[in-house]
Image 1 (cartoon, one colour):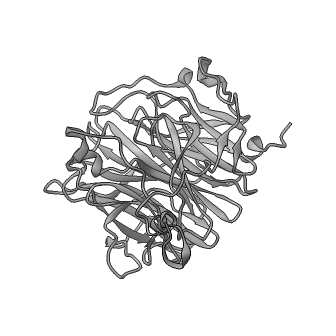
Image 2 (cartoon, helix red, strand yellow; image 1 turned 180 degrees about the vertical axis):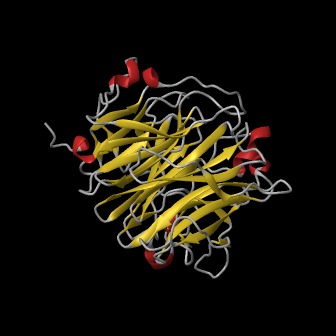
Length: 398
């Protein structure tokens, strides 16, 4: 069957998004045998010089839940942002905290970036961006709380000194209207354009976005990407309609292409990935990779020499450990991996709370002062940072 201009009907339907394009090869893969199932910490060992520091530890008179740790450097200091609550994850009393360090090792006591909402409104960490002169702090706002499933939106605060902040304002789209979605926690500058993901409401439907605004405040446009279908029926179907299969994306660059990495909600315990080679406008259909993942938020990026990396728990089961950084010189084959934190040095979970469990949760990473810094919440209560010298991650090291 022919369509306009003699094209086949299938090609025409695919072009307008009425049918999915044929599955593509995954944008990347893990080298065979890289992770040794059954071995302690999957057979991984730390890179030389790896160190871990504590930003915040709970006590009898403090909040006991922390998660969503995000790092950024600004004017010679390192900043950590996270969400905090008295006991439970996604509780109405959740607020956004941040702390500052001059050396990445010793951290100031946390202070509030955004206080808990009222009337069921919840606020959670949205991450950072900076052009070097202005620090942007994103905060996600959930008007009906997270548990309602209705979704939320992003707002931002600005600072010139990392201590005093402007009043919050909505993140704006290219159409001049506020973006109706929460922002993912780590924007990346790729080919001169800022890219990240938003989870659009109603619900949380992950979509790629890009902007040419150097501060990431306005001009956000949605990239074209077709979400994968969800495998759900019956009582679960309505819930699944409001949550895309691919969620919580991160990004790395490979040549002229941006690769977006997703958590897979279909319990494959592998990462999903999509790529764009036209500066974020068009994206391939997400495909399943062979990179193992404990179904959690992860972090991707590039080292200064262009090496691509993935920070996650490369486990094919629910425990979010070990935490590892896995690297690729070409962005296609990830062939070396180093332990960041393992089962052997996991401190006990000290306090009970909803959705709390042992492990290393929701890592986000940044390169600063010759090292890779990874922030995460241990057991969803300790805010911690692991630092690895860049020289120890090189494929050329002895």
